[in-house]
Amino acid sequence: MDDSKNNPNQINIELPEEIAEGTYSNLAIISHSHSEFVVDFVRLVPNVPKAKVKARIILTPDHAKRLMRALADNVKRYEAQFGAIDEQEQPAFPLNFSTPKAQA
Image (cartoon, rainbow, N blue to C red):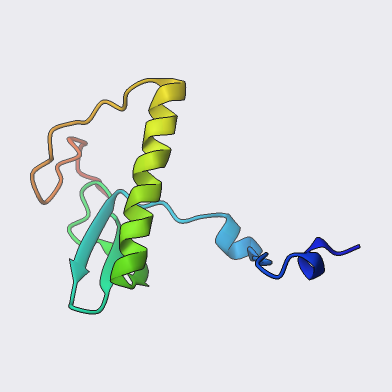
């Protein structure tokens, strides 16, 4: 029997294959207005002066706060399992990857 019929509060969430692969981001830019938070996930590539926003997520303020708490809880559980995350000093912007410049 389908449990979702017995539990009206259950949500069936579909994860399409192209989304399930994920998108790598090494920079997040967060801005907000009175009614929403905007999180732009960016991928910076060494020696490329231009970066692209790979995903933009728009949240209500209350959902942004729930996300912040959920992320903090997950970091706490991660560190309990794997040890403290070593936070590097905030890099200068733009980031310097210290790699040789690409040449053709």
